[in-house]
Length: 196
Image 1 (cartoon, rainbow, N blue to C red):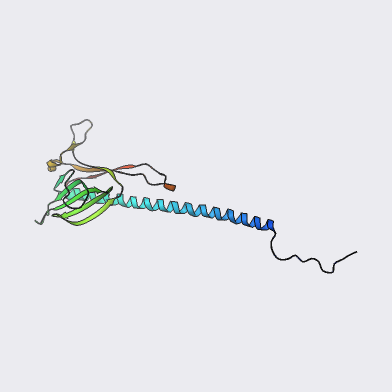
Image 2 (cartoon, rainbow, N blue to C red):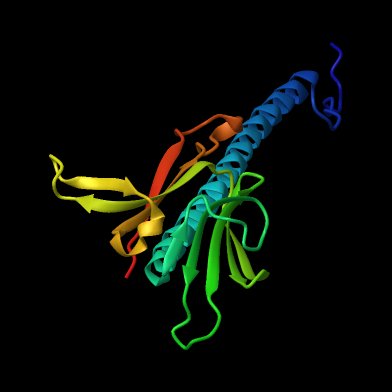
């Protein structure tokens, strides 16, 4: 009988099967984490875009009614009193202190809706209100109680004292969804301002 005095000591290391199992588990965990991080980054970009659009909508919703309320005259589509782009609406405010009239000009340049405040022919300030807008349309309207049902009707802005409200309608594109897809539809925004 041949008995060994020392049992065979296992040498340090891993078997091939152990290495393959560890590699497979590592790959599964890495892939899962990669997909989770990728999804979070995509939703972060979408959320950032939605916040920017909400800010744009808030800016124009605040500025437009105030400009119309202060106006003493309007011209549609307007003339580029100052600034750049295609005119949509020009509002003129007479300075109550007897100074020069101020012109607020709404126009579109490279798909963005701009608001420029002009002193004469020079730009006092210019603000990019909304990016990626299509088909902005301004309209002066008066209340027509004689129609059935009573409703607002379009009138020329030349009859400013008779104008009850000015509307600005524009189309905002759909918000981008994950992976460049669309998560909603284009929205039409109508802003209303009433002359004082």
